[in-house]
Image 1 (cartoon, helix red, strand yellow):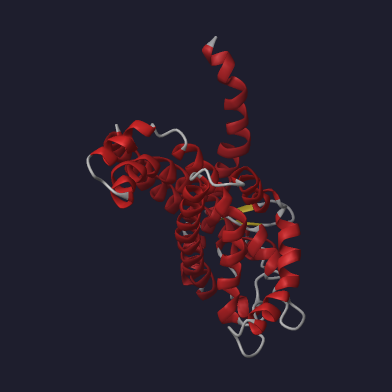
Image 2: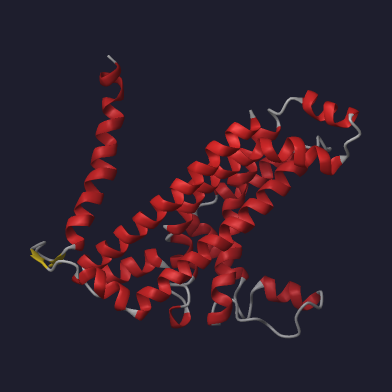
Length: 287
């Protein structure tokens, strides 16, 4: 009976996860004709080609920077806002609904709105910053290669920080108040309550959230592609997912695109291992 109940989920995993990955691994060792699907074995040539390609290397390091900066900012902002919403302040119910809005906005809508807001000439961001005196002249948010990636990170943090706010706030509300009272009786202040009770309690959910968000952010395609109009000036916004698309469809190197996808999957598997290891340690420490 147990096998019968899990069989639908197992079939879906095999069809939509295992099969595509196996096909990608096979393609990574072949020269694939994108029109006919005919495969010609080339051994490790596709892997050698992607490591020798300067554009692919740049996209790889750009993806590391993109994922790391997103994780740091999303976690810090998510935890800070969640703790603020947990203080039972007046109007907190409305605030909790409002913080979810960015997460519910479709990526295409967010990209169009922020393309308008960050417009070099007519954008409201430059207008506001100049009015308050932060800048003297308009910044080229989406046309300057040096500004492109920080702009993308800011938009992505705005859109996906609510994920951490939701999971951390749910954990904060499940912490027994007796623990805080015990620390207070011992003379502990706010910082002691945070380090002795709050932080150990939220670390497991933060690590679980980081595991998911790291994978999703590393493979994030829609926001970088839509906001940078395909890659940004001088390819300054081309991360690994955009480079995989370029290799597969622009250069018709399906084998190299598959090799890059397989390498990324291996690296993310390694990252997942360390996240899960930290999760188990934090779970034992909080017991």
